[in-house]
Length: 291
Image 1: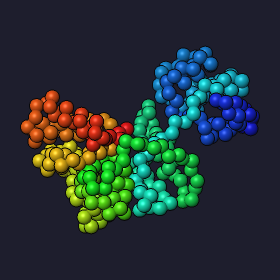
Image 2 (image 1 turned 90 degrees about the horizontal axis):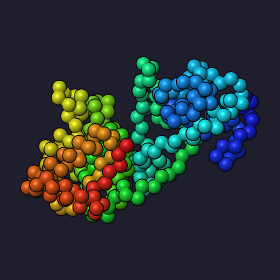
Image 3 (image 1 turned 30 degrees about the vertical axis):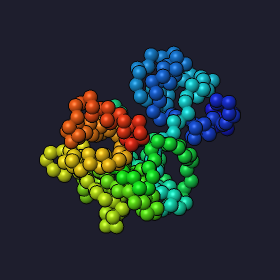
Image 4 (image 1 turned 180 degrees about the horizontal axis):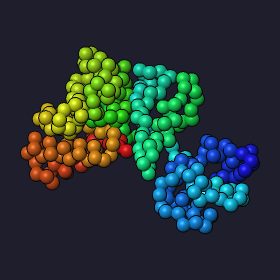
C-alpha cells in the first residue's frame, strides 16, 4: 500500500505509514487482535502473542483492501509508565529515569521490551514523546515525618527522587532505604548517590540485599526481618512506608514480612496485625507503586 494513503483511525486522519511507524502496536499483538486478524484472513490461527510481521508472513492477506481492514483492527501502542528518579529542586530542567532493558523468550527467540529497547538505543539529544502521569498517592509526607522506602531493582527510582528532594529541602525527617538486586558489583544502582547521602546524614539507614552474591538467596524482606525491632519502632513513631518495584513476588513478600513484624514486635494476633496495617493504608502511611 502507498504509505502516504490517508486513513481515519479513531477520529484522527493520518497516513498509513505514520500509523504503522508511530501510533499502532505492531510488535506484540494481544490475543484479541490476533483473533480479529484470523477472522479477516479467514484462517485458523492459534491464540498466541505474535507480531504483525510474522502474522503477515505465515497467514498473508490477499490484497491491499484486506490489509487496510487489518490496520483498522490494530490498537494504539500502550504508554509505558516509569517512575521519575529525579527531583525538580535538585535536577532543574531534567527528568531522570531508571530503566532495565526487558528481555524475554518467545518460541525460543530472544525478544526485547518495546519501550525499554527503544530507550536503550536513543542517541544523545534525540527527541522522544512523553507525558507526565500524576500519582497523587505516592508522594512524600511533610518534611519532619520519617520515611521507610523499600525499592529493589528499578523500584529505587522514586526513592532517589525522594532523597534528592529531602536533601535539597533540608528536611528534618529520618530516611531509611531497603534496596536489593542480584550482584553488588554490577547492580548497586545509584551507589555513589546513596553513599554520599549516608555520609551527609540525609539517609539515616541503608540496608542492602544482593541475592546472588552468596549461596543462599537474600532479599529485602530478609533484611527487614533482621531489623524487625527498629522497623517497628519507626512505625510506632509515625513513619510512612513506601514500596516500589515488582508486584509479584516482591511486594507480596514484603507485605507478608511487614505483617509478621507488626504481629511479632507489637505482640498482636494475626487479625490485629492486619487491622493495624489496614489503618496505616487508610492514613496514607503505607503506599505501594508496583508493576
